[in-house]
Structures are given as C-alpha cells and as structure tokens.
Figure (cartoon, one colour):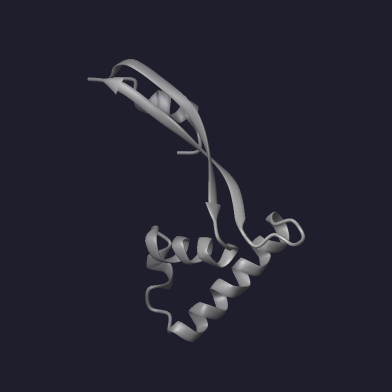
Length: 92
C-alpha cells in the first residue's frame, strides 16, 4: 500500500501497531528481465494473459527501452531500482 497513514487507519482495531517504511534495492540483469518478471509474475500478468507472444514481446521490448532510457546510465546493462514498501505489524 502506498499510503502509510491509510495502513494506520486500517489497523485501528488492532494493538501494538507499527508501520515501518522499508527500502530495498532490486537488481536485474537487464530492464527486459525486470519487465518480463512484472508481466508474468505480478497481477499485471492478467492484463497481458491473452496477448500472442509476438505482440507481447514487442510490448515488453518497448517498456524495457523506456525503462533503460529513464533509469540506466550510459553503458549499463543491468537495472537497479530502489523499491519502497510500508510494512504493518500488529496484534489482534
């Protein structure tokens, strides 16, 4: 969940509530590898499940190209991206 305050509100019926923001650095061999993982192993997979492999490959290549242009330094092949998550711990 993107909103830590919303997590607090959802946990109002619990006790010993804590919400911590955790940042991890994800590393992928290439932007294409990251896009492939997103398109096959996340809820996004449902959006492309009925696409034929040719158009799907073209879509993934286009997204990977945009990612590479936005996030990769010249000469870099891999993709390094910080990912932030809010973690809620509580007791009932």
